[in-house]
Image 1 (cartoon, helix red, strand yellow):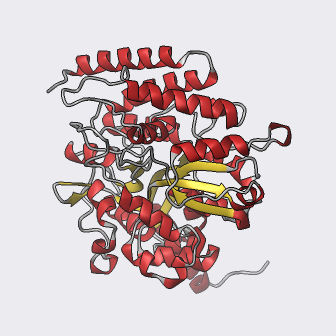
Image 2 (cartoon, rainbow, N blue to C red):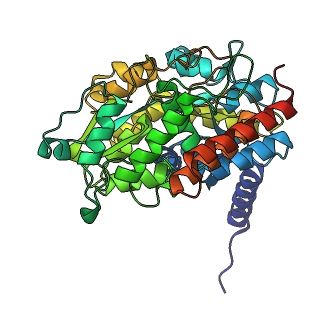
Length: 439
């Protein structure tokens, strides 16, 4: 039997104990995030972070958009403490920051982080009284994506600034149900951040609004009737079957497989429709979101941001991760590994000064769309709220989800447009009365 010398044994035991001590002292940062392409890509690249921070372990909770919102809202409101980093948006950050539910991120990353490089409209939307409570992983508006080959074959030319009338006419011309080719794909899945976001922005362009200056719901208005009737008729004539169940991810898959001639949705979809996963990547054009000649386009303003809940036990480790994921260096890491078209868009000014990025076909249209959105004046007529595709009050999440169910029912045909709007008016008034509006 071979004997191990005592000195060697001592070193081996010491090394093992040291490794055990490091493992025991490692902090675990639990990140709740949404299951879209940019976030999934981030998870694949986090080896770069853990290599630089071996004392921090990352645990991921990746959820569908509606489920994510429900889980993180419940957790932060009840102080559940399940997560150290939250993926939330321009709606939640100012409301939760004002209630001291989030950690201030004004000191994130130090001088090298360059907070001043964050696009002003995106930064303002994630701040309360000048204090940042979230930093953008990416920022977005909405725009029109279309198949250049199908337009050319049909003798159509997409304007850079299309109208809803043009879009509707083109969608009907480009629909061939026998070939499973649909003129247009639009969100129908219920949820304030799904069909509520799309129809809220669309309604702005039709002159509709959620509330008047006295906080009275406006779903009984002619403008809302025009919006919802136009949408339902268009989708019935030119949309895919089962559209009432389709959200962002479902429509992305339809477009990537050549089923949609047009898709109006988030500018962040640009990387998906031009990626190697897309069968039509080399046949995609981009234009602004449509308008109705009233001075407002159907483009929203949003950022998927990373935020840290107050009371986390791992604040400093969480800040290190958030700084890494939203830094200029992260954008370069994505470009190096995936190409410039896959870099998270809409967060930093310097990205739109980078000649490599400006060669990406949707880059300039993304910035133009973001700049065209004005959350402080989102509607044709004056309103008492801020927010383009949402209303920045705590009650909106519940109201928006319920209204989204009514809109989805109208699209599915289980309710008429008139019935859906009557129900939306009644439920919104009931919830606003219960909340004590006007305040």
